[in-house]
Image (tube, rainbow, N blue to C red; front, side, top):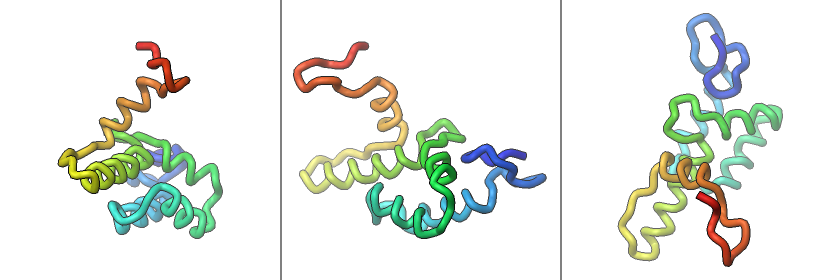
Length: 112
């Protein structure tokens, strides 16, 4: 089978290769405690190739948002909570915003 994250060989009955499983374990151990740059630093310390880390961060194997989207959602929820706004951002919310497009200029909305 192919790895759900990096699309490299994972093994006969495995959905995730050993490298991506290692990265996923790092993510689950630290979820909600670190930001995106800190997580990237931790991933780089593993010694895995940059392409493998990028593929892992950007993959959305289950359709619920990539690891990058999940970290961004956690950061947004924490920031909004610090401002007194009780809302739970999800990775799907971040994915939907990312796919809609970003503001190109501050005075113009993105095209629908």
